[in-house]
Image (cartoon, rainbow, N blue to C red; front, side, top):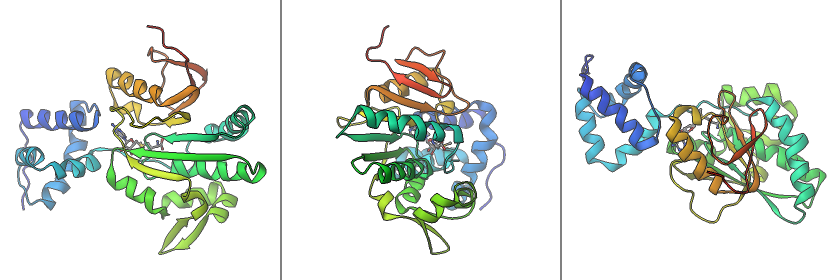
Length: 277
Ligand SMILES: C[S@@+](CC[C@H](N)C(=O)[O-])C[C@H]1O[C@@H](n2cnc3c(N)ncnc32)[C@H](O)[C@@H]1O
């Protein structure tokens, strides 16, 4: 099937609008080539020759929305991405929380979890902490809008670049928590038992009475415009415990936004008890 190369401006805009409507991701028009490349494969699979026909499919078939979301999201991640965050997590956040909350269960949220490396990085450090403090308890929620990456996280099966990075960077944790399986490596049941994966759109409120003590919202705010960022941060704030800790990505900052978090250290913020207008 031949796919058209010239796409009219109205169709381009309509597809960029769909990205925004379904994910909150703000894609500037100059990103059109990137989007076109990703959509091309989908058009081929559906045997469609014109992008405007794909717009109709998106409107008529709700199940196509999930495939569309999987295509348009960028899911790059790795174990222990941004090492200084993890040093802080291990040296400060875990001991500080444990000192202040004896008997409670630490609630952690990987709020744009992608394929789960971030959630399992937390789990490995929590397991290590538990070895030293047997009374320590923790639970991790890993959410993302894209169903295909969540499926990888749920499977706990990693191969290629992702697991090689862990093997090189943290050989002792790799050896302890991963087992060779089916041409890749499977995460240990002791970690999986603590991590729940779930689909969640950050522009919506998280249901349930969640009170996360530590939330990792990393490398996702960059995809939203300012209003979208404020909306997401308000949803995240509501799901967090008072004085809960929020960790963001290296190219992100909350300093210009009045969103109910106080700066603590670069990339680390603390939820305010009350928000002042
Ligand atoms: C670049 S990855 C970041 C993964 C991980 N947090 C990290 O820093 O390594 C961004 C993730 O955000 C997810 N995402 C994008 N828009 C989202 C939304 N509106 N709600 C929830 N997740 C979203 C994408 O599917 C993608 O997996």
